[in-house]
Image 1 (tube, helix red, strand yellow):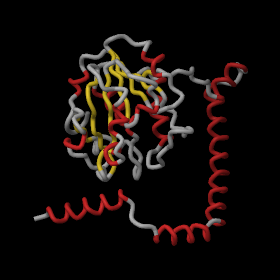
Image 2 (tube, one colour; image 1 turned 90 degrees about the horizontal axis):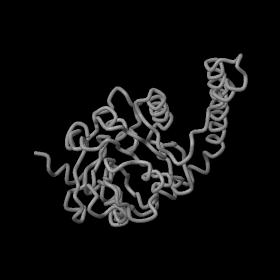
Image 3 (cartoon, rainbow, N blue to C red; image 1 turned 45 degrees about the horizontal axis):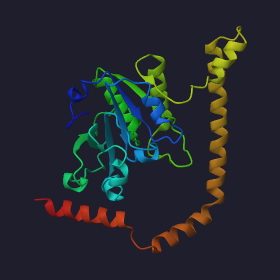
Image 4 (tube, rainbow, N blue to C red; image 1 turned 60 degrees about the vertical axis):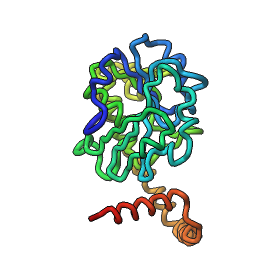
Length: 278
């Protein structure tokens, strides 16, 4: 996958690859039942959040890194992450980094789980919006689409927060959704979700009023969305101004808190990096 590590040839034996987001609305067993034996399923970080029991189909587990290394290693959650995947069909883990600030974890820390390392830090240069970096699911889905001959299916990619899954603001969810939906409409990418895709407002308007073309309805929809975003930005600015005092107090007390384990790990890693310099 990308600049170093895994090659496209490793995915060559599969007719279909299903990229499964950590979306608690998914029925993974039902989705898996639609695909034949020559299918690989790709999970991320904590698939125990979407799996209800052992998953006996060919699968890999992508483990995203941050500055401390693979997140499940840092959080000591590797056993929980792989518990429903371990078995003869489990193809192992892939430790993924997509930004230069992210670091791989040593292979010895994966407690016997077969792991490979994949660096996509330069793969999206000039494409993904600056000052943001891709989510794991988006990065893997796009790389597979561009490099592997199998049919690529995504499921659960909504970019919306749920009761159990949070949305990281470092990713540009609007851009990612635009790319994925464009590729689906173009027939390059396939969607395998439990629920049927809801028609957009423009599609529903054009279906009910034939004299309104889809392009006109879509333009009106974009105009309304822009006005709503402007209104929301005004409210955010207002809230930012009125909460200035609260934020100052919060910052003062945060500064008094003892260092967290993650901060200590980062400081130790920086010391090692400095000491390793010639």
